[in-house]
Length: 265
Image (cartoon, rainbow, N blue to C red):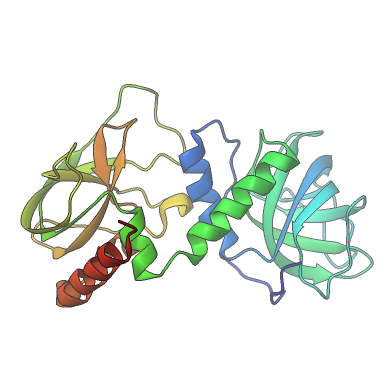
């Protein structure tokens, strides 16, 4: 079981019914997971109701029946198979099943939690895999791992950017709102022979799914860890970890050389 503190927060983030590509689901889950202390799947059984006397029923409270727990503080008893209260915006319809990402609120004869986000349309087994991958994204920080995962690494400056739209689907609530920026390359540290980097996409959305996205402006410099996205036909940077200060150039070069020497011949 996950070991974490169970505490209340005041930030509430609206959930959504997901029908988006897995990449966006993983990104969304990775973000809400960072602040979640109790994650579970449940079915809505009562709207505008409560299971905790100290929590008055209102338009934002609903009673859900917990069917599976993914993450739970060690000191909290299991509520699987029981009804609990969730404060949620917006409301979900009766008998709707969702995976809820929540933080603590009140514990009494039952428990009341505050929702940070929710996802619908996935089985418990599928969501377990998504959460596992999201945890890996959350813990991703080592420089050598970042170098291995990047398709191309360049030092340079951001050029002017413009909105980038794809024709494959309409925008969703959690759309990254891609912008395409020119890239003034000063040095190529790791190359992808098939696709030379001269531009890249970055998310401009302020949605919770992209809370770690870099907010880039023309003229900003750095070392860019670029990831090729075949479905977009473009390189992308998705998190602040994809950009390193230029003062770390020699460190990054040395790490790349070390990894190249360690490759089997």
